[in-house]
Image (cartoon, rainbow, N blue to C red; front, side, top):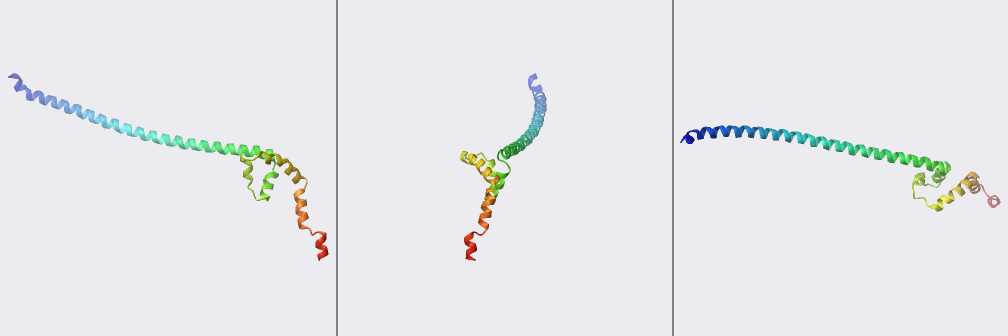
Length: 138
């Protein structure tokens, strides 16, 4: 009989305790969720910054490699090769690609000798000057 009189009081004390613990757990879960969300956002921003930084480094490395290859190639073939290609209407950038056939590399010294000896000027001068047959026709 003693239990029936105290039973509602014990239940009320237990209910208050359970509600207090529940409030503490819910608020802890909300705080943990907020911190977790902020951490995820920070990780996403950091990952994006790292990706952009890696892309910039990759681009800079490619640019440096291209300029290094261009300097090496330019010193190998000389300044006359880009001028020769421009005179034929070909972009000089084709030299710096790795697709140059071996046969063309073998012909480059011959072309250099032809240009250095004035062969192009002689050809152009011969085409522009009237020949002996042209004088007789006049």
